[in-house]
Amino acid sequence: METQQYHYNVSGSASVPMAVDVHVPANTKEELPIVIYAHGINGFKDWGGMNLIAQAFAKAGFAFLKFNFSHNGTTPARPEEFFDLEAYKKDTYLKRQFDLERILNFLHSPHPEFNCDLSQISLIGHSRGGADAILFAAQESRISKLITWASVQHARTPWDKMSPDEIEDWKAKGFFTRKNGRTNQELPIGYSLYEEYKQHKEKLDVEMAARRIKQNWLIIHGDDDEAVFVKSAYDLKEWQPEARVFIVENTGHTFDRVHPWEKEELPEASLKIVDRSIEFLKEVQ
Image (cartoon, rainbow, N blue to C red):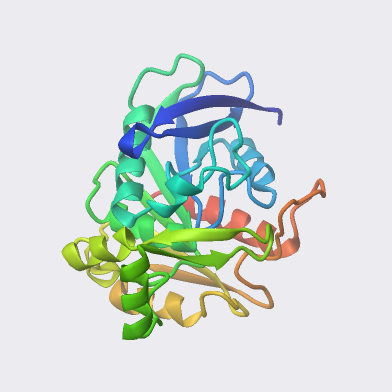
């Protein structure tokens, strides 16, 4: 099946533009169920072969929307580069919640180029995007199904393991930097991220949100995840016993993808999570 891709800019938090694309089956007039994909930290919508994943969902009969969060450091002109480090420094969890709402509102605006079934909007979040997805789905009835890939189980990244002295240093300087192993950039993380958490702990409580999830939820994780241990999947399952869990053996945090992904096919582990996700979304509930 052939697919088509449409590109948009959507205004996100602080009116920062977000690059958005939607993959759909070509030449179809049918109402399409929708999948929104939320990337993780130091990720972006096209990271590691995501176009191949989007095409797989489109070939299965979905409209697949992926986007760059407003403050992830990319720009619409440079969607795969951490170019705007001032925006990156100001990124927070609540900004990303606002971005997700803007994406949802964008889907509810007229789109004559493709036909969507607004009663079937599913949300997929990877890594930190998983926490974003859980927090959002817990309070958004327009999301019909939830899938998390290698999700963290809290909204305390990256200070969860920092000492009080390190946090004080962070406060005094206003930001600290962490090196991106792929690009070798020193990426700044603003203290406003921690201030937001202190002021909105209940709103950013992933455990509380997980317990409130009413949507059908599929939790996917690799058993060799080196970045977010597989225990996170079981914690989420404990908090929401109705959720289903799919563990992929012998794979890590990105399900064997790297960036750039220059092959024409996805690795086996990524194919498994795509196939299981599509199967889950097609189930009649």
